[in-house]
Amino acid sequence: MGNIYTDRIEALRKELDKNDANWYLATTSDPHGSEYINDHYKVRAYLSGFTGSNGDLLIGPEGVWLWTDGRYFVQAKNELEGSGIELMCMSNEGVPELRDFLKEKVLEGDVLMFNGQLIDAETGVEIRDILKEKGAFLLAGADPADAVWEDRPKDSSGKIKILPENLCGEKYEDKLSKVRMRMKDAKCNIHIISALDDQMWLFNIRGCDIRYNPVAYAYTVITEEEVKLYLKEEAVTDELLAYAGENGIELRSYSEFYRELKADEDSLVLADPAYTNYLMVRLLEKQGAKIKFERNPSTDLKAVKNETEKENTRRVYLKDSLILTRFLKYMKEWGAKDKITEYEAALMLDRMRLEDEECDDLSFTTISACGANAAMMHYEAPKEGSAVINENEVYLVDSGGQYAGGTTDVTRTLIPKNASAELKKHFTKVCAGTLALQNAVFLKGVSGRNLDILAREPLWELHTDYKCGTGHGVGYMLNVHEGPQYIRPKKYRNDAEADMAVGVVISDEPGVYIEGSYGIRIENILMCESRGKNSDGEFLGFEALTYVPIDLDGIDTAYLEDKERKQLNEYHRAVREKLSPFMNDEEKAWLENATREV
Image (tube, rainbow, N blue to C red; front, side, top):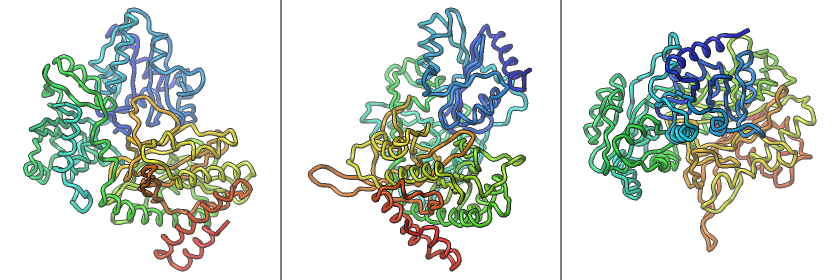
């Protein structure tokens, strides 16, 4: 017996038949390679029912498969139930990558379709080459999903605002000069930027086209003489028109970008393969242009926060830490007694943040999860049927805000007083991993892949691991996830590893996830700083930006070494010093106990 998703897939197969095709690929993307996308582009979710932020759906003549990463294994298993779609758990033993799967399954004469605007350049070119080798064919024009998706949400085009200088810390013209210098170093005379957050950073503007991500749909073309910014007409304000005129920015229509995309045989185009879509590549190739695939210069420049951004970020994280600490106080004292649900708890925390005059929005949907739900890394509590918080299960909350002065992200897990020895052991080791990374000192030139083991080692001692990265870059009044710095154990596709650098803001969030039982995550946000130079080189470390108590009900000191115990006590001492001046007497008394020495 089928469900709505099997019906949709069968309807799509009929569209494939009309095009003499038998394979279809839907990824999780928009024309700009965005991680989070607005509802108009959620084709994969519409067809499969899987709502996670990462996944590739492949529909073939004899099956349907969905690939996703370890953050979503539990969620995908639940959401795909009854759909007939086979879950492909990426990186698990025996699970082939999508590309290897196509090499094995596609037959000579087969035809695969995908929307060329929704596939990144590297993936598109690789699939094209695989099909060619197999004697199969690619159709990357019309999307058959367009004919299947009824009542499709409209695309977004919200108004753009210009950031004041006291928030930017650097003028557009200075940023452009740095980008052009990188173009010159790469010997490129055209640079196309598709990544939305990179464009927002460059022009010192912000939009509202993707939920929780203050970006606008745009394309940018930079040459030695010109800068063209393609925007939707509805997004342009009189203020933006004046700003563009003052800064020599030529505003063009977003809908005309592909028609106006011009490059000849003498052109060397700099483009980021992770954000440039396959359709753009095909258009440039047909015109004879050469493409140099490299990471956008703006991605590297954006990641290193300037002094104004650093100072604003510190200020914003302090007030955000105070908000979360007050929420955790309530949850420890009254959450279970008041029998509030996961959904109600999330609403409470969201309201507390949004009451701050500088908080414009959340930075992602608040994860508020009790018990087994906490084992799903990106769980979203439903309005109806949400679990009731109770004193016998863990409670995990992962949340953040978009402030005038920074983007926040923080996770804490509350542990019941009657916690099992196993739960306390796991929590203590997660805590040790978080603090080990936070207190790291390392040579300049080290990447996040070198640092990842510091957070995992305490858990590896228990033969336990978490199926995701340890840390991601955090944007400044932008996307909560940004590159190019990451902390994770291995290199992923499309990655060009970047060294840790002074001014980078990055998360530190190891965890334990026991399906059907509980999940634990402790996340602090860190800012990379210099610790001095000597004959051996420059040493770097991290400044903690997050100052929120770690639940001592989960700490079993038998699993803490002396160094780890000292790190926990020092962190909690800093939490007291940072937050106490803003608290009343009752709050101070609670904080004193919550951060007592162990």
